[in-house]
Length: 497
Image (cartoon, rainbow, N blue to C red; front, side, top):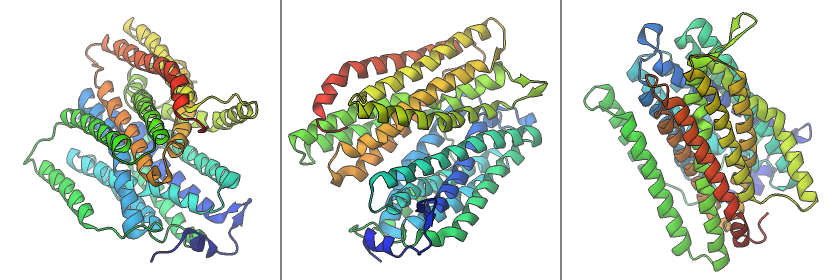
């Protein structure tokens, strides 16, 4: 079962080239596109469905609880990716993990169609496990298509990244529009169909991947199913007891506990890495930079993920969404961000390359600082917009569009840079672990996003500008501190660009 990466790549079919790239890349491109169509399409209407009145087909959940569930859902998707990586590396291989994850996502979204509260939350749980299996492993297979590395691999990942954002754009636009026209339940059917199309495409073109992602991780010891079975069994047992009404789960308390747990796990890992992992002095200094980037990432995503939470509620309740007599569904505005990423990603890449040629490229901490400040500025825009709402007015969609533009620029400064920097700042033997830490930082941020959104009270409109101003200060102060720390952090990471 075990085989090297090179031998896996050598067994690729002869007809593997398409537009100068391995044909398998386009198998993964469309699989990921449909998965992101499913994920972002459902995300665009998740909180709106939960807070909508039961008489309108929603769940009638209060804003705070719905926000906590939203944050937990997103956070768990990132955390379960750690389990998904273990299952692929040690038990079944990445191709099977992608396939199993896609099946679970399709089943999970099909389960959401029923709309009843208990079955709906079971569908979210199934989705989480599917995302955890598919998301990390499909990217790993992309890397295996390019054993030579270099610029060709970078180009391949750029194409793959465009597939992510194309799926995000199409899902964020089509799914809420479909739900607006035909009802919530039919809206949830579209993500299920999208994932089905992705699975069919994957199975029909899987041969172009050759053996990439079939074998277990090179040199990895075969794992045991026991911890997986115990963990999944425990989760399903709690879910079954909740569905049966034997126990009552408090989403707000769980979200708070999850934030503390993720934070404590991060502290424990960094303590191990710095003091007990046998690092040299130079490696230990770089680990301190990792801590700063971890905190910056968590702060950024706590603000950024308001898109699907408080911003979505703002679009639904306080935004004039009429254009030429047509009412744009609130969730459709979620498509603005992926559209802007498609437009601006090449521009930002060109800027970084141009600065690099002039030896003026910003360091990773400086780019993080810019990203945080841009995120904060977006909330300053929303703070002003919320002031008009307090005066009894509905505001134009341009306020949200301007905010999404600033947040997109912030994302392009921080997210790709952070993932790359994590792999550069540690010895190769810790790369897999540190990528898991990056998932933890994102999970912490998304969970905090739900908790922050819960501070908005629809019965107390003054809580809305207060929330936006609070997150503005998070971004502004976080970015300012990162800028002040940048000279010191650069000294701790000599030779890392």
